Image 1 (cartoon, helix red, strand yellow):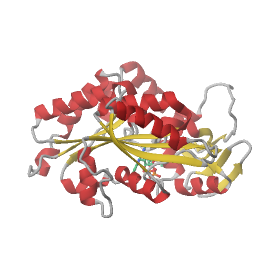
Image 2: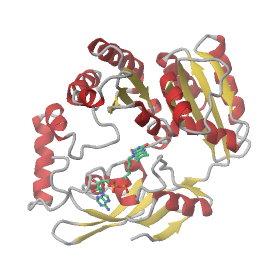
Image 3: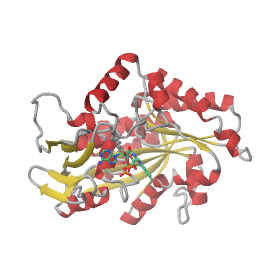
Image 4: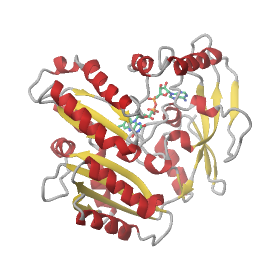
Length: 375
Ligand SMILES: Cc1cc2nc3c(=O)[nH]c(=O)nc-3n(C[C@H](O)[C@H](O)[C@H](O)COP(=O)(O)OP(=O)(O)OC[C@H]3O[C@@H](n4cnc5c(N)ncnc54)[C@H](O)[C@@H]3O)c2cc1C
């Protein structure tokens, strides 16, 4: 199941089978002068079936939304062996319940996706990438608002990187370097793209960053002058997950809050966790443009790794309470699987859980589909 079945450049859709690797589908779209807007660090291995079943997000969610927003139609093998052919390539289709959304993000618990119709967009013809050192996380959010006021349609990525994350990357990812002459505490990586030629993206970015330098939100900025420089700046972000491994035990929290509350979340949770365990190294980074923070905790230097990791539930419990108190979610883009089933039970009320269980029972009464996951 690794065929691209159809590409319609006028309808702006591509129909791909579930076993297609995401990067290959992106390539097929690019060859036709189109863009598949789904992009994640794992795109070289992740397959369409997995990406849709996890409702993956990624670096362009701030502009295009999650996987769910890219899907127009699905073909699914149901638990009773029948095939649901919902491979419709329509932008408007209000004929009853929109069943595809049951399978997207269901982690394979309701059926097996075999193919999907995905949206395409005109391919970008201009881009501008910059990294800015910002005063703090609040200044980062103000900067995002300024960029969106200037030209919301072109803000494709807006990622937050803390100093500690940059240090980890420089230490552990060969060939990376700090693009600034001075050390700063907080950074954002910004990418603007446009399907128009001569869209003036660099000028827009300089204008917004210039104003932010004037009022102290931005302390310094570097612009990518070539594709190679853009790639080098992006590497600082993409290596951030792997660079945490050599630093010892790491407790992961993949959470989201409303974008306007990201700074409040980072400040509150950092203070609370540091009170609990002095010396813990908070590595809060990620897709703040869509409110998704990877709030990871590295063990204190020299601490016992197993002892630190044995407190996983305790620390994630503290973080999740803060997240939910701010109107957020304890699972932004990494799903539930087996690990977070109890957390789902704890935070989602009986009404919501009851509905989920009834849907599961109605569609998969014998619990054949990925048993033990999600519910
Ligand atoms: C380095 C790295 C970076 C990542 N970055 C991001 C990111 O930025 N944003 C993000 O959201 N996620 C990210 N992820 C996680 C990402 O969601 C998954 O890697 C990817 O989407 C899953 O695809 P896969 O083919 O590997 O699926 P698998 O891991 O094989 O499967 C994922 C789940 O989907 C189910 N499944 C798989 N195929 C089907 C099918 N055909 N029908 C029904 N169910 C199916 C599986 O049973 C499983 O529950 C990242 C992962 C890595 C390793």
